[in-house]
Length: 80
Image (cartoon, rainbow, N blue to C red; front, top):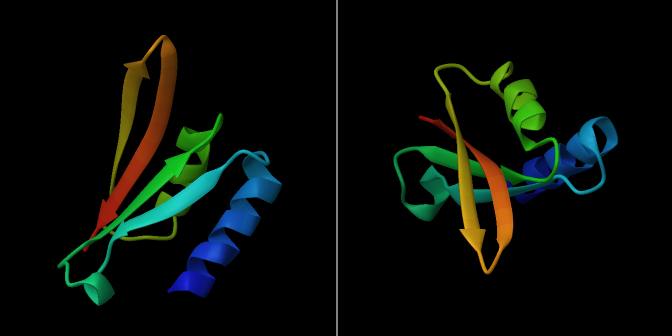
């Protein structure tokens, strides 16, 4: 699974910008029933939508938070 995430990060950086980072938050190998990938970076939504074209029955949500005046956005992709 680690090599898949590394490959995805490399492809996403090449296609959507060097600041794109994908983190695996949940997966069956970790004891969960679903998978959750958190994607951050300027074009996170575009990277998430590109990933969604390859995964069936996945959901996409954009999260936005602010801490100490700094706004952070990320996309979450969940699939079973």
